[in-house]
Amino acid sequence: MFLTAALILTSILTLFSLTLAGIALRRARRNRDSVLEELELTRQRVQQAEQELAALCSAAAGAGDHVLTLEQQVQRILERQNLLELRSGGERPYTRASQLVHKGADIEELVDSCGLTQGEAELLVMMQRGVA
Image 1: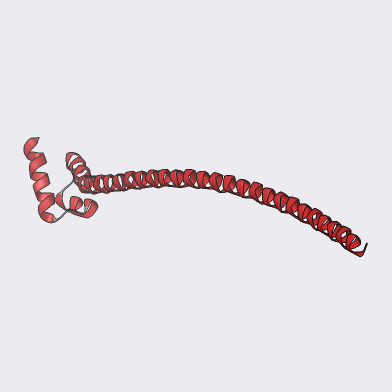
Image 2 (image 1 turned 180 degrees about the vertical axis):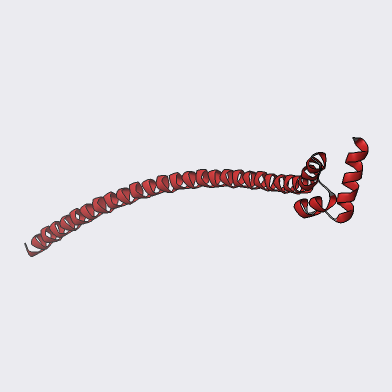
């Protein structure tokens, strides 16, 4: 009888241990499944973040190219403006002096009002009076 009781007790303990092991195994599987789901969500988020980063990099490169184009256009405009200022700055005194000669201005007046040298004023007067 003692042997039978020991055998029953051992069987009950074994069954109890197997039940606990089964419960622990189910929990471990649920935890594993939960971790795998989280891992998949994390992978999807990382993939989405990578796509967004690639789009931002592409947009930044496009903006950089656009800024470079604008800088080049501004540089060309500034160079053209400088050329026009130099050209018009060089023509203005002579144009004004020529108009003054037509109105009868003398050499001293051209030197004083237009900033011409004595020789430039004399040459301009000779050219204008020679043409007229």
